[in-house]
Length: 280
Image (cartoon, rainbow, N blue to C red; front, side, top):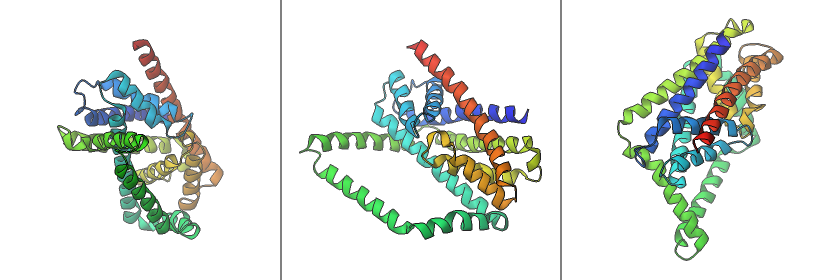
Protein backbone atom coordinates (compact mmCIF):
# COMPACT_ATOMS: atom_id res chain seq x y z
CA UNK A 1 0.00 0.00 0.00
CA UNK A 2 2.80 2.42 0.86
CA UNK A 3 4.59 1.57 -2.39
CA UNK A 4 1.41 2.32 -4.35
CA UNK A 5 1.18 5.65 -2.50
CA UNK A 6 4.77 6.41 -3.52
CA UNK A 7 4.00 5.56 -7.16
CA UNK A 8 0.89 7.79 -7.11
CA UNK A 9 2.99 10.62 -5.68
CA UNK A 10 5.52 10.07 -8.47
CA UNK A 11 2.81 10.40 -11.10
CA UNK A 12 1.55 13.59 -9.43
CA UNK A 13 5.12 14.95 -9.53
CA UNK A 14 5.13 14.44 -13.33
CA UNK A 15 1.98 16.58 -13.59
CA UNK A 16 3.45 19.31 -11.37
CA UNK A 17 6.64 19.36 -13.44
CA UNK A 18 4.51 19.70 -16.58
CA UNK A 19 2.65 22.67 -15.11
CA UNK A 20 5.90 24.35 -14.08
CA UNK A 21 7.48 23.79 -17.49
CA UNK A 22 4.38 25.21 -19.16
CA UNK A 23 4.92 28.46 -17.25
CA UNK A 24 8.27 28.85 -19.04
CA UNK A 25 6.78 28.04 -22.45
CA UNK A 26 3.75 30.34 -22.29
CA UNK A 27 5.71 33.54 -23.18
CA UNK A 28 6.52 31.92 -26.55
CA UNK A 29 3.13 30.31 -27.27
CA UNK A 30 0.11 31.10 -25.10
CA UNK A 31 -1.72 28.10 -26.62
CA UNK A 32 0.68 25.56 -25.09
CA UNK A 33 -1.53 22.90 -23.51
CA UNK A 34 -0.98 21.20 -20.18
CA UNK A 35 -1.43 17.74 -21.70
CA UNK A 36 1.35 18.51 -24.21
CA UNK A 37 3.90 19.38 -21.54
CA UNK A 38 2.73 16.41 -19.45
CA UNK A 39 3.28 14.05 -22.38
CA UNK A 40 6.65 15.66 -23.05
CA UNK A 41 7.76 15.03 -19.47
CA UNK A 42 6.58 11.40 -19.55
CA UNK A 43 8.11 10.58 -22.94
CA UNK A 44 11.36 12.21 -21.83
CA UNK A 45 11.41 10.10 -18.68
CA UNK A 46 11.02 6.82 -20.53
CA UNK A 47 13.65 7.88 -23.10
CA UNK A 48 16.24 8.25 -20.33
CA UNK A 49 16.15 4.47 -19.87
CA UNK A 50 17.54 4.11 -23.40
CA UNK A 51 20.33 6.69 -23.19
CA UNK A 52 21.20 8.99 -20.27
CA UNK A 53 19.82 12.55 -20.55
CA UNK A 54 18.44 11.97 -24.06
CA UNK A 55 14.99 12.57 -22.59
CA UNK A 56 15.70 16.28 -22.21
CA UNK A 57 16.07 16.56 -25.98
CA UNK A 58 13.21 14.19 -26.77
CA UNK A 59 10.69 16.17 -24.75
CA UNK A 60 11.69 19.32 -26.63
CA UNK A 61 10.72 17.53 -29.83
CA UNK A 62 7.28 16.72 -28.38
CA UNK A 63 6.70 20.43 -27.76
CA UNK A 64 7.91 21.64 -31.16
CA UNK A 65 5.58 19.16 -32.90
CA UNK A 66 2.53 20.47 -31.03
CA UNK A 67 3.30 24.20 -30.72
CA UNK A 68 4.83 27.04 -32.76
CA UNK A 69 7.91 27.34 -30.53
CA UNK A 70 11.35 26.82 -32.11
CA UNK A 71 13.37 23.88 -30.82
CA UNK A 72 16.27 25.99 -29.53
CA UNK A 73 13.93 28.14 -27.41
CA UNK A 74 12.28 25.03 -25.94
CA UNK A 75 15.74 23.64 -25.18
CA UNK A 76 16.56 26.89 -23.39
CA UNK A 77 13.57 26.44 -21.08
CA UNK A 78 14.70 22.88 -20.33
CA UNK A 79 18.22 24.12 -19.50
CA UNK A 80 16.68 26.70 -17.17
CA UNK A 81 14.36 24.17 -15.52
CA UNK A 82 17.09 21.57 -14.93
CA UNK A 83 19.55 24.21 -13.69
CA UNK A 84 16.93 25.49 -11.26
CA UNK A 85 16.17 21.94 -10.12
CA UNK A 86 19.86 21.22 -9.48
CA UNK A 87 20.29 24.51 -7.60
CA UNK A 88 17.29 23.82 -5.35
CA UNK A 89 18.45 20.25 -4.68
CA UNK A 90 21.98 21.35 -3.70
CA UNK A 91 20.59 24.17 -1.54
CA UNK A 92 18.22 21.81 0.28
CA UNK A 93 20.99 19.24 0.70
CA UNK A 94 23.30 21.89 2.17
CA UNK A 95 20.60 23.08 4.59
CA UNK A 96 19.78 19.50 5.63
CA UNK A 97 23.45 18.59 6.18
CA UNK A 98 24.20 21.81 8.12
CA UNK A 99 21.02 21.60 10.24
CA UNK A 100 21.63 17.94 11.03
CA UNK A 101 25.43 17.96 10.94
CA UNK A 102 25.68 15.54 13.84
CA UNK A 103 23.67 13.00 11.80
CA UNK A 104 24.69 13.67 8.20
CA UNK A 105 27.84 15.83 8.27
CA UNK A 106 30.40 13.08 8.70
CA UNK A 107 28.86 11.05 5.85
CA UNK A 108 28.94 13.99 3.46
CA UNK A 109 32.51 15.01 4.32
CA UNK A 110 34.11 11.56 4.63
CA UNK A 111 32.19 9.67 1.93
CA UNK A 112 31.62 12.28 -0.79
CA UNK A 113 33.68 15.44 -0.46
CA UNK A 114 37.01 14.12 0.88
CA UNK A 115 37.39 11.28 -1.69
CA UNK A 116 36.58 13.68 -4.53
CA UNK A 117 39.01 16.29 -3.22
CA UNK A 118 41.78 13.70 -2.88
CA UNK A 119 41.21 12.18 -6.28
CA UNK A 120 40.74 15.43 -8.21
CA UNK A 121 41.83 18.99 -7.78
CA UNK A 122 38.27 20.27 -7.93
CA UNK A 123 39.10 23.96 -8.33
CA UNK A 124 41.43 23.37 -11.29
CA UNK A 125 38.79 21.25 -13.00
CA UNK A 126 36.12 23.93 -12.54
CA UNK A 127 38.43 26.72 -13.73
CA UNK A 128 39.57 24.70 -16.75
CA UNK A 129 36.01 23.97 -17.82
CA UNK A 130 35.06 27.64 -17.47
CA UNK A 131 38.12 28.73 -19.46
CA UNK A 132 37.38 26.31 -22.32
CA UNK A 133 33.72 27.32 -22.34
CA UNK A 134 34.55 31.05 -22.38
CA UNK A 135 37.09 30.56 -25.18
CA UNK A 136 34.62 28.63 -27.32
CA UNK A 137 31.93 31.28 -26.82
CA UNK A 138 34.38 34.04 -27.79
CA UNK A 139 35.48 32.29 -31.01
CA UNK A 140 31.90 31.49 -32.05
CA UNK A 141 30.77 35.05 -31.40
CA UNK A 142 33.73 36.58 -33.25
CA UNK A 143 33.43 34.42 -36.39
CA UNK A 144 29.63 34.03 -36.57
CA UNK A 145 29.35 36.38 -39.55
CA UNK A 146 32.28 34.83 -41.43
CA UNK A 147 31.78 31.14 -40.82
CA UNK A 148 28.56 29.26 -41.53
CA UNK A 149 29.10 26.72 -38.74
CA UNK A 150 29.86 29.41 -36.18
CA UNK A 151 26.85 31.39 -37.41
CA UNK A 152 24.58 28.35 -37.00
CA UNK A 153 25.92 27.61 -33.51
CA UNK A 154 25.54 31.28 -32.53
CA UNK A 155 21.92 31.21 -33.68
CA UNK A 156 21.22 28.10 -31.60
CA UNK A 157 22.93 29.63 -28.56
CA UNK A 158 20.84 32.81 -28.94
CA UNK A 159 17.67 30.73 -29.10
CA UNK A 160 18.69 28.78 -26.00
CA UNK A 161 19.44 32.01 -24.16
CA UNK A 162 16.02 33.38 -25.14
CA UNK A 163 14.45 30.24 -23.71
CA UNK A 164 16.63 30.52 -20.61
CA UNK A 165 15.49 34.09 -20.04
CA UNK A 166 11.81 33.15 -20.43
CA UNK A 167 11.53 33.31 -16.63
CA UNK A 168 11.76 37.10 -16.90
CA UNK A 169 8.68 37.20 -19.15
CA UNK A 170 6.52 34.81 -17.16
CA UNK A 171 3.18 36.02 -15.92
CA UNK A 172 2.34 34.99 -12.35
CA UNK A 173 5.97 34.12 -11.55
CA UNK A 174 4.94 33.02 -8.08
CA UNK A 175 3.33 29.94 -9.67
CA UNK A 176 6.75 28.72 -10.83
CA UNK A 177 8.08 28.80 -7.28
CA UNK A 178 4.87 27.32 -5.86
CA UNK A 179 5.11 24.38 -8.28
CA UNK A 180 8.76 23.88 -7.29
CA UNK A 181 7.84 23.72 -3.59
CA UNK A 182 5.01 21.27 -4.31
CA UNK A 183 7.31 19.09 -6.44
CA UNK A 184 9.85 18.75 -3.65
CA UNK A 185 7.14 18.07 -1.08
CA UNK A 186 5.96 15.29 -3.40
CA UNK A 187 9.50 13.89 -3.72
CA UNK A 188 9.73 13.96 0.08
CA UNK A 189 6.45 12.07 0.41
CA UNK A 190 7.64 9.50 -2.17
CA UNK A 191 10.77 8.79 -0.12
CA UNK A 192 8.83 8.71 3.16
CA UNK A 193 6.26 6.27 1.76
CA UNK A 194 8.99 3.89 0.65
CA UNK A 195 10.65 4.12 4.08
CA UNK A 196 7.31 3.35 5.77
CA UNK A 197 6.98 0.28 3.53
CA UNK A 198 10.29 -1.17 4.78
CA UNK A 199 10.12 -2.75 8.27
CA UNK A 200 13.93 -2.77 8.51
CA UNK A 201 13.92 1.05 8.30
CA UNK A 202 11.34 1.64 11.03
CA UNK A 203 13.89 3.65 13.06
CA UNK A 204 14.09 6.34 10.33
CA UNK A 205 11.94 9.48 10.54
CA UNK A 206 10.73 11.94 7.89
CA UNK A 207 13.94 14.01 8.11
CA UNK A 208 15.90 10.88 7.25
CA UNK A 209 13.50 10.30 4.34
CA UNK A 210 14.22 13.83 3.09
CA UNK A 211 17.97 13.18 3.30
CA UNK A 212 17.61 9.92 1.36
CA UNK A 213 15.55 11.72 -1.27
CA UNK A 214 18.22 14.40 -1.74
CA UNK A 215 21.11 11.91 -1.79
CA UNK A 216 19.16 9.79 -4.27
CA UNK A 217 18.92 12.87 -6.49
CA UNK A 218 22.72 12.86 -6.68
CA UNK A 219 22.52 9.27 -7.90
CA UNK A 220 20.13 10.26 -10.68
CA UNK A 221 22.50 13.09 -11.67
CA UNK A 222 25.12 10.50 -12.68
CA UNK A 223 24.93 10.04 -16.48
CA UNK A 224 23.73 6.42 -16.59
CA UNK A 225 20.43 5.22 -18.10
CA UNK A 226 17.64 5.89 -15.62
CA UNK A 227 20.07 6.24 -12.69
CA UNK A 228 20.37 2.44 -12.61
CA UNK A 229 23.29 1.35 -10.46
CA UNK A 230 24.40 4.79 -9.32
CA UNK A 231 21.16 5.37 -7.36
CA UNK A 232 21.36 1.92 -5.77
CA UNK A 233 24.99 2.34 -4.77
CA UNK A 234 24.69 5.80 -3.19
CA UNK A 235 21.49 4.90 -1.29
CA UNK A 236 23.00 1.62 -0.04
CA UNK A 237 26.18 3.46 0.98
CA UNK A 238 24.17 6.16 2.78
CA UNK A 239 22.08 3.64 4.74
CA UNK A 240 25.13 1.60 5.74
CA UNK A 241 27.33 4.59 6.67
CA UNK A 242 24.82 6.85 8.41
CA UNK A 243 22.30 4.39 9.84
CA UNK A 244 24.26 1.16 10.19
CA UNK A 245 21.96 -0.74 7.84
CA UNK A 246 23.83 -3.57 6.05
CA UNK A 247 24.78 -2.66 2.50
CA UNK A 248 22.81 -5.58 1.07
CA UNK A 249 19.67 -4.48 2.95
CA UNK A 250 20.19 -0.90 1.76
CA UNK A 251 20.37 -2.16 -1.82
CA UNK A 252 17.01 -3.90 -1.29
CA UNK A 253 15.45 -0.58 -0.23
CA UNK A 254 17.06 1.21 -3.20
CA UNK A 255 15.78 -1.47 -5.58
CA UNK A 256 12.22 -1.22 -4.27
CA UNK A 257 12.32 2.59 -4.46
CA UNK A 258 13.90 2.76 -7.92
CA UNK A 259 11.89 -0.06 -9.50
CA UNK A 260 8.52 1.28 -8.32
CA UNK A 261 9.27 4.70 -9.79
CA UNK A 262 10.68 3.14 -12.96
CA UNK A 263 7.43 1.20 -13.43
CA UNK A 264 5.49 4.46 -12.96
CA UNK A 265 7.63 6.21 -15.56
CA UNK A 266 7.25 3.34 -18.03
CA UNK A 267 3.46 3.22 -17.62
CA UNK A 268 2.96 6.95 -18.05
CA UNK A 269 5.66 7.24 -20.72
CA UNK A 270 4.05 4.50 -22.81
CA UNK A 271 0.62 6.07 -22.30
CA UNK A 272 1.82 9.52 -23.36
CA UNK A 273 3.65 8.10 -26.39
CA UNK A 274 0.50 6.28 -27.46
CA UNK A 275 -1.56 9.45 -26.99
CA UNK A 276 0.82 11.55 -29.10
CA UNK A 277 1.04 8.88 -31.80
CA UNK A 278 -2.75 8.61 -32.09
CA UNK A 279 -3.13 12.39 -31.99
CA UNK A 280 -0.75 12.74 -34.92
